[in-house]
Image (cartoon, rainbow over all chains, first blue to last red; front, top):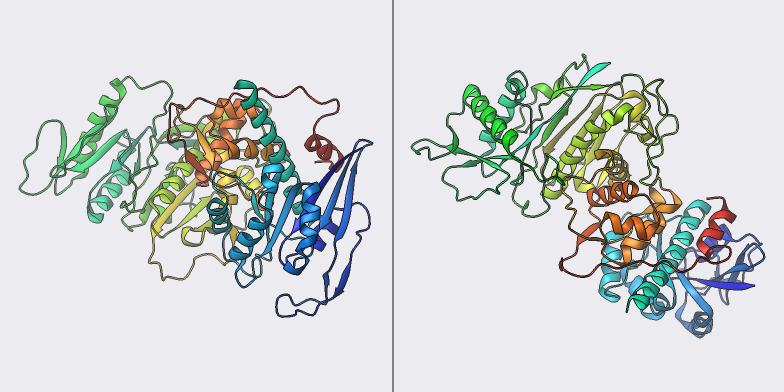
Length: 188
Length: 399
């Protein structure tokens, strides 16, 4: 069975756990502890190891959804999971103190996944904070990863349809990038 | 059947004062149709005909007719001209001559009669008003627009027929939804809102799209109202890239056969005319851009140019088909024209063109600077036994 690992990364409180719950067809495995950092995200618990969900596609494919903890002190987990991943859903909450910088920081850490597969950025809580606009996220991506096209969407992590759109766009981008690369290789 | 109208040529006002623009717009509004001179007036230097002050150095393209405005004390030169104070009669006469000249010109096959270009719009005012159509306007619809004196330009149009009672219960505002074949009798549902019997209804949206494109390219703080017959109006505030409408977009074709747009410049500090945050303007532009122009390229797009996305459309807020994602992925990763996009994304050339129209109206496209760059030749890999993950997930999720 082919396995496709998709990571869900982003700062604490961006909605990674919720996004996986929206997509997974199994009950999500969560590893949460009491949140002691209420200043960064005002929620009761936070992921300390990883979250896990999956989508089985026929007998041949399984999409594994891993949510990595948002705090930098857990970044040893990031390295382990990145090696197996083909794609990244990067969630950034628009009501963070500096969401554009958060985006830049996570792209710095996970941007190489774009070379392996693809990345999609989901801007959450844009109903709470209407700025920055997704144009500003796209601008930052061009600055950090020039020449790369990473989809940016506003999304509610609780909304299954929206999260499916994000996931399908990620996979469409991965497949199209591979097709273009193969075409150029054959043409060369 | 009711009568509909459309402009035959576009008239650009370049370097004129707001009062001169207002006068010309008013005369065209009140006189042009009766005089047989239907014109779409825009603040652009890439229209079929241009009115430019005689003392301004200006060279028109070969396809354009240049009309000089000779102010007090000036001397008319060769070619067409009008003098101040501008009179309706003189303006109509010169526009008739311009129309004849345009009628004699051999136009390039690939371009339409309306020309709007993407560059050099910076300093132009955005006070455009376009009424589509101008005939048979019942009381309560568009009548206020005919008396506006905001210095705006107006559209006048020639007789144009459209079916009156077509319903489109399955309207799907996605660029991927290919319009149904034209059905004369009985009327059939069409896949596109705005795509009516024989495609006539889209003609009105063509001009709305041109007007909106013009306003957006001007980058001036502006607001606009689109009135759709028998329905509430759509209010747009370009400063906030937002709109309000109590009309579901899918219904505009069901009820509206007459459309009018009015736009006005506003000071940046004025309060918004929409209830913020409102709906994203991208949603409206996606709808209009993918419906307009009958599946032909928008007049501001050039067939020889290739385009690439500046950013992906925000699909979570757009009514989209799954195929739109593949299309965005294709044109997001390399410069393509409509034919190449069609091939890369596996969609019809018409769907590719509609998508480009919508993206360009939304301001998402950048043009390839190096026109001589070789195109990306897509040679799709041999299909996997049961398709790629995208196809499988699509089936699995019932998308």
